[in-house]
Image (cartoon, rainbow, N blue to C red; front, top):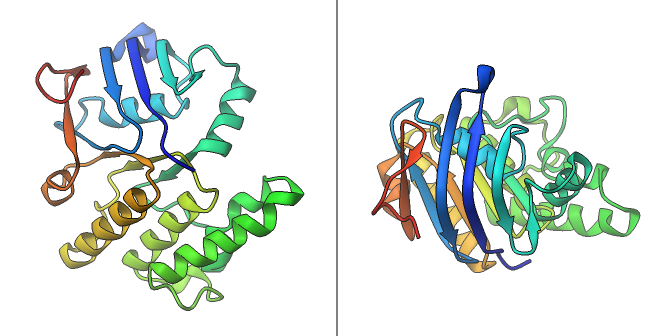
Length: 227
């Protein structure tokens, strides 16, 4: 599934006591672009990423992926949009220890329609193999950090999403493993024409993105990739 364009207009995300966490007046991302989100800890990078996934209920303004404005959609419609279009890679992997690599990577099959189950599992298996996970029937509780992150990437890509959102995907990895993961993630995103947005402090990852956006004190700064 090819990437979707993103248009953000007058976005405000608030927290407790209506405190503003993120503000973005204008942000445009072309379909298939690879974008890095950078900035100091606590600046609002992950909040922005989760708002772009439709996972922050206090977002207002406009977050338009193609023809879908996530802010205007109801909760059920946002959930369906994520299921059909978004693959998420989390910093802490969030794998089920009691499941195999194949079981974790193909988890979306449990929520898909009957006609989608086989294709999701086949795609998960293909991505696992491409990423070098050959013991797909082994439980992930014995996997290394790098292997776990590759399983998490396969899970994110199993439903052939238009959009990949990654939150500090190299934070738990050593340098060699992180560099391999960066190459794998970018190769998979670019070969499929997917829109990739990654929050990271990792200069090696950010240097390989098409462009970067700075988030400082919750604001997207001029001259940092803002349209």
